[in-house]
Amino acid sequence: MSGSTLPHDHRALVAIDLGAESCRVSLLRWVNGEAEIQMLHRIPNGPITVGEHLHWPLSRILTGIEEGLRLAAEAAPEGIASIAVDGWAVDYVRLGFEGRPLQEPYCYRDERNVAAKDAAEGILSPEDFFSQTGAQPLRINTVYQLLADNHAGIGPETPWLLLPEYVLHWLGGRRVAEYTNATHTGLVDLQTGTWSEPIFKKLSLSLEAAPEIVPPGSVLGKVKGPLARLPAFADTNLIAPACHDTASAIAAITADMAHTAYIVSGTWSLVGTVVTQPVNTAEALHTGFTNQGAASGGYCFHTNINGMWVLKQSMDDWAIQGRAIDLPTLVAEAAEATSIPGLINVDAPRLMLAGEMPARINQELIEEGLEPIADIPGNEPIFARLIFASLAQRYAVTLRNLSAQTGRTFERITILGGGSRNTLLSRLTGESTGLPVFAGEAEGSTLGNFAVQLASAENSNPALPPDPALVRKWATRLATQDSTMKEPVATS
Image (cartoon, rainbow, N blue to C red; front, side):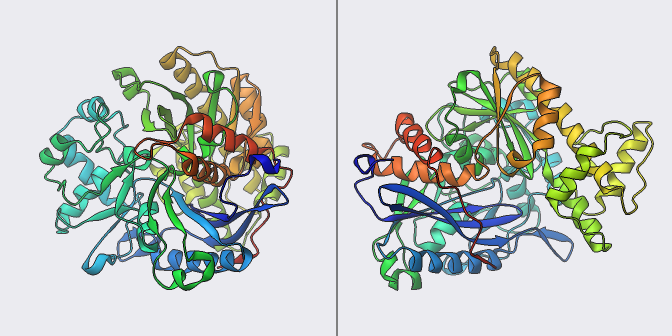
């Protein structure tokens, strides 16, 4: 990238990406006219059990983010122009006195959501939810979690913030819900893009407790508090990018989306494409698709598939037994493990839960009339091959449904996220779908986060999402840099 295409403000940028397995703080600096991106800090993450419930270790995450931001301040003597945060959707922080968290936020996998969803569907059917919001009525959705809070005695009037927006608020930004992230709550009216007052009212939820919805690229204020005393953060904007990490990752795709399907491969696999108009038909509902806001307008039309969660939970279980194995080794050995008993439904309800995953996989095999896999040392690659093959088959079925729903003929698949490094899964996906598979950015969410920040600085109308051409321009230029994201220089 030549100096003539540099942004007007040559200061550095920071992207914070909240992940269910790790959270990352990355820095973009302009060095000799080129963008250099470095991951400065990685914070291990994962749900923790508190009493009978699953929560996120928010205090630990925030401590790690502050460490990462201090590293960024040291690494960027020119100063930092802006910070933006993206992350997983649906989970939120309830705010108490002086905006402090009431408790560590619940994890979307907590089983309290089951009863809450059943109660909600006694008031509004799944068909009603989907026709009004375009959001697939999954039990992880914020709407059911808020209803579970009601049942637990947490007053509906208690303010809340989705997790990425909470981090921005903690840094000094005003209280908002960025549009792409808000659409995952199951509470946004599909036609107006605002909170659905009828749904709030019917479910006895408080509209006053919900934050203001703002478009991606919105400036929320300046860094405040102890970090603001560091020279690098003396005049740093806080930006809501596409706060949902999938929307950020998809913003980093530079291929023609009219003929491209995406798979965002991480804890979840999200399989879909970008459409200009929502698809909220009964068929879309019953085949598991959802309509979520895209970074530059339009909709990410995709379905959620249980993804690397199944493998990660299996690996955690083996590690507890003293059978730890690293992922690259496991993938390489799984490529040689060609004999598996069959395929499983990766979206089976029991596979959504935490703990004892190899035993859960074997329960699925037995119910399919297949032989279980002996959970003994040396069989880990067979489990992994089974998971990858089952995912690839699920992708193929989903892509056929996606083509039917959108009327599109896809010519390629772009895989984003950590799964883009998994050459075995990519190969199996190509074999199952018959389409060429291209590896996108492994850190696509971070790249898209930076692209929206840069487009936001050029946006002539802050009340609207950034121009798609600007986002694509910056995503393309960042993706074609010779330098690649480095491994973290520190770990919490």
